[in-house]
Length: 83
Image 1 (spheres, rainbow, N blue to C red):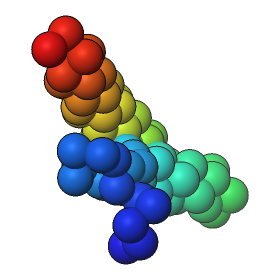
Image 2: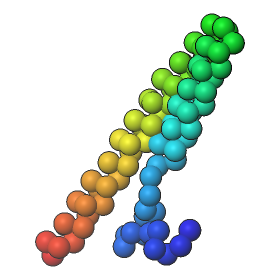
Image 3: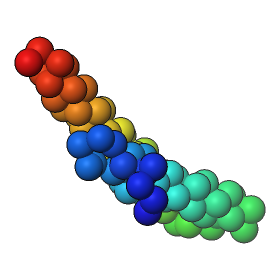
Image 4: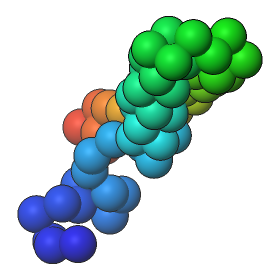
């Protein structure tokens, strides 16, 4: 990690790991669902759909954490300006 990846308050810039992992799960689920459809494997297709749903949820959780962090950082910045 470089110094330019950090905010003034020392927190790391970028997106939450849950967003990255969730996106990867979604992509893997799409591939698994497609393979299930291609090979006529209903169980694999359903597993792919479930993986996609899990990935979407994890991605949303990561987004919520990012927004909370940004809100806290912004609030801290504005309270520093009040002094």
